[in-house]
Length: 144
Picture 1 (tube, rainbow, N blue to C red):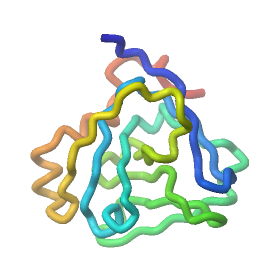
Picture 2 (picture 1 turned 180 degrees about the vertical axis):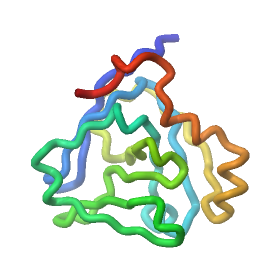
Picture 3 (picture 1 turned 30 degrees about the vertical axis):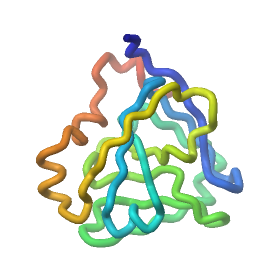
Picture 4 (picture 1 turned 180 degrees about the horizontal axis):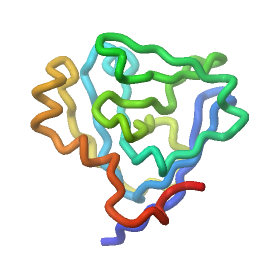
């Protein structure tokens, strides 16, 4: 099995927010049932923040929403309202990329796991989610 990261691109519905992410062709995505993710139908995969690059022109179209502990920063487009990525509470050194916002053609397989966000601490403790924002190889995997 090949563990080399490849470039995936994506963004919001209106195209004002665009990004590039280095990830495997086959990813583990998380379906969370917290109050925010369940209302949005969010399924996301997590990458190290160094593997994510936001297009410069996108910053002015982003805003963020927080709730509860205010550790997660749910970023969304000011124009169309889509959350194409966010800063997850579970991985403060990572980025959660919304699976449905990845441009088609680069992901070959997605395994979906459930995260019990309504019982966040217990789910976090019993999952491997924290490890997903760690680089397993050298820093050459980082986006410049």
